[in-house]
Length: 192
Length: 192
Image (tube, rainbow over all chains, first blue to last red; front, side, top):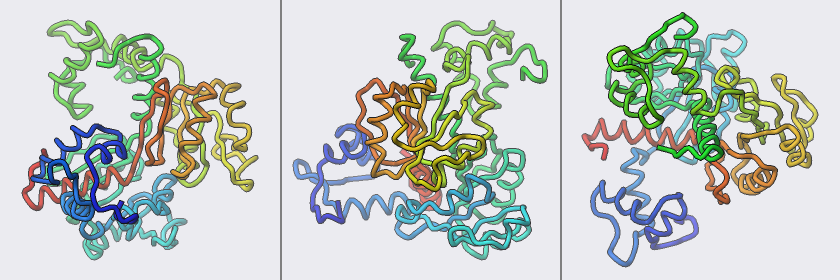
């Protein structure tokens, strides 16, 4: 909307673009204070700036990927992340065939440089794309290096000290959710 | 638990293994009828069978991947999906360099065979790993071929006819969620 020069946007337009309702948009935004003017909508540039501030994306977040396997490597080339405010600075792997290479412009470093480089590069978020068996150990190491958040592609549970924010991306879990919806639609089971 | 021969499991153990509370486990399961015996817990084999039935995973779900780029190709080699009950049968791409190849044992077919092969192979779920610009067109085509669910890695909204179940996996959205949590922890903003 900023790019095409729109000045005002209504909660209905925001809802339509994001798959929710106008009432939900107004309710969600009201959690963060006063936005918009009754009957006029939201000022687009101001709303963007406030949302960036709320999301902590006034400046790009510095991200590292641990595990340069299939999923990890794919993420290194994911341009959408840059445009959404995330800069992938560095990757780590244990495989000697991968270490020292540059994948989609991102250097792959050995695991023994992990803590040092995370701190030196000011990494705030780590994307964990390791086998589940080592996810906990890596989580411990990145926490000790001062990283504030982990996005884990390893489905295993992580014990963390509470200072660390963690989210999971689990393709199998999402497919299970779809499978449930399909079964419910077929068998007439109601979604609870 | 089945693999190690456990016969009974408590809601507390289930909660511990899945990052929730015992009360929530009991509440969630109660949505689907009567499970377990008060004070004894749940019979492990029976619980697994009931959960598989609820999730529609008594037999493996047949899955196709549309878009054999970085993310799509990575998913073709994702062994975790098989063990969780999803069988990737076939992939599709427009790139002549990819079509005709086999990636991690999965054949990559041209897009002009899409509807025919989805129907012939009895595909129930499509993983959409195309650029966002063509996601809607592909969604229309797979719906017309009788596919029941889409897991989309393209962040764009999809207009569907309501018979189709859709879920999204959006790495940037999850990173935005992490960034918000980190900012809130730093600035003392409360999560609403």
